[in-house]
Every structure is written in structure tokens, then in C-alpha cells.
Image (tube, rainbow, N blue to C red):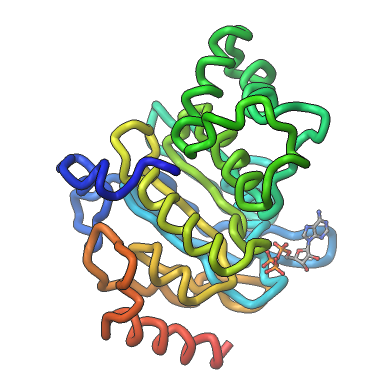
Length: 274
Ligand SMILES: Nc1ncnc2c1ncn2[C@@H]1O[C@H](COP(=O)(O)OP(=O)(O)OP(=O)(O)O)[C@@H](O)[C@H]1O
């Protein structure tokens, strides 16, 4: 198991990571300024402007093919706003992490080797010993410390996705970008991982401050997020930003609250208009 709600319940610092209201004092984690992007003749993003704050969990919803994954790749610096605009990360101690829909694990590497591998290559290189220690820590965070030497085929789909989350967390990101991370999982595992991710985001054991998650599930977006960004059809822009008026921290059973139903209903109404 991951760090549980009850483990963290006595720690007031977890409450620092849930700004349900954005005030003028909220610190920006990333700003997209009038970003437009085309693949050849196909314009995918049109004038996307967005501020995402430190200590917030944001979901991105929108029609299939509108450009949600493209937006994340832009934020990860894998793509450039080639038709105008810029992306600004004001913080000096920024580390970006990414989790994809599929875990994309190397089948010939064990759980710990899969997590350690990216730490030994790229810009921020760690020694093999450091990488192993960080990978062990990340495995503990996702509750898979007993599966250190298991290969991917010896793990369930949910466990493989936890390894992918651990791999992203091992680099100690401040901003985590997630592209439908639970889309391929059954409903039971998905719900479990939803709360495990929330606990990790709240945990003082990680540097994680901001989560930006693309999802196709309206319910998931409401349950997890402080705000939901609704994208318009391609070429996508920001259609709407909907705050989620649920109490923090989020707990199992909040799906029964009237505020949950009202926000889901509101989002459904807006989806129908797209
Ligand atoms: N590398 C690429 N080259 C050309 N076109 C691309 C490339 N990547 C994405 N596209 C196009 O950009 C558009 C947006 O794709 P993207 O994957 O960002 O959408 P999405 O909103 O994430 O879709 P979905 O919800 O179905 O996952 C699509 O029309 C897609 O074909």
C-alpha cells in the first residue's frame, strides 16, 4: 500500500497542498501565454492561455483528438508553440515528471531497474548508487517495496502503473504531468490509484506541488481536482475553467456529496455544448 490517509491525517502540512480558491497571493507554477501549435497544415492548439498554480491539482478535459496530449507535451518541452506564444515556469527549482497512459516499462528490467534507469541518463545524472537509493525510496512510496526484483510480466496492470508513477516520482518532481494515467485500468484499480495519487500529492515526503492530469472521466476530474480545464474541439483553446467546490483533503465517499453531483452535472452540460 501507498502512504495512507490515516498515516498522513495527523500531519497538518498535507493541507497546504489544496488551494480551492486562487488568490492574488497564489504562486504560479506554469503559465501558457497565447500558445498555438500546428502539425504541418493541421492547427491543433489555438491561443491557449492558462495559469496553473503551485499546490494545485488540475484536470484537463476535452473532446477526443482536440489536443490534450499535445498540450502536455508542450508543457514538458517535447514540443514548441510553433505558431506563437510562450510557456513560462517562474520557479527556479522546477523539476518536471511525466506519467503516460501506458506504463511503458522495459520488459527485461526489474521494477527497481526500470525506475533507476532514467536517473542515470539525461541532464540530471545520478550515480548508480544514488539512483538505486532513489528508486528504492520511490518503490516504498507506491507500496511496492516487496516487488523490487519482479519483472513487469510478474506484476498486475495496476502495479505496473504504480511503477510508472514511482519512476516519475524518483526524480522528485515539483510538477507532475499525467496523460490519462488510469485510463487503461479497471474501475476498482482506478479508484484505488486515484486516492493513492492524491495521498502522494499531499504527502510531505515528496516535493510534488502541482499535478496536471488529462482524463476522459468527468467524475475522476471532479473527485481529484481543484480546477477542471475544459478544452474546446480542435484547434483547441481553453473553453472554460471550472473550480471544484469539494472539501479538502478528498476522501472516499465524497462522490455522494451534492457538490460532487452538481459539478459533474455542470461539466456534462458543458461537454454537450462542445
Ligand atoms: N506528432 C504528430 N504529428 C502529426 N499530428 C499529430 C501528432 N501528434 C498529434 N497529432 C494530431 O494532433 C491532434 C491532437 O492530438 P492529441 O493526441 O493531442 O489529442 P487528444 O486530445 O489527447 O486525443 P485523445 O483524447 O483521443 O487522446 C490529432 O488530430 C492528432 O492526429
